[in-house]
Length: 249
Image 1: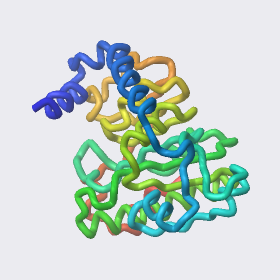
Image 2: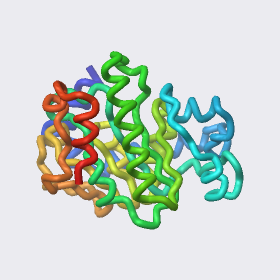
Image 3: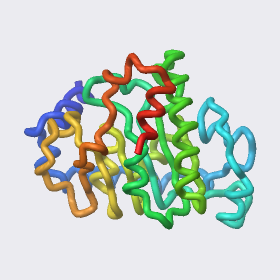
Image 4: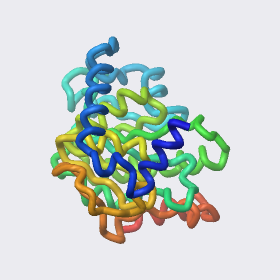
């Protein structure tokens, strides 16, 4: 009931969190800082071994250019825990009418040209793991990584599926630039981030009411061309057609 209540308060514009954003922000940051203080893992993201890469990017063995990473950070296989650009990309079960898939042109409009580390975070491919959804997300992430590497050749681009959810929250909260997809998971970091945050206009958040003040860091993606491709629309498309629509300029 608690989770259901929170979801409803996010979706409806009369929800208390929309009118008391600072309180929500402070509570979330307090919890995140407490987690970070107790974290016992290494102070870097280790991608030096095949097992680490597999865990990092989920079950789909996307290629990872370790020589590029080594050149970028000076230490082979070690990347910063917090990137300068954090992207949340919900994929697997986005067939709900007001959810959907973020078109890739959003990223070229929001990621700084001098980005060095771009981490794309998504849910585990085993979540709601229907074969068609796993194949669809695999096609999307292969295309997205190629797309980002072509447009940001000086950056290290990493796809992270099913990584530690609390570390992902920290990345989305503390990155210089954070780009969210249609999801409440990314809303909390978006409220707490002190850098620059981009969030899609969606019925999921306050029924598309963009008049609420979520702080100076928060920017709605209000342009029609930046709206998500609705999952219900893409449901009957082939994976190839969906990817082509996502890649469209």
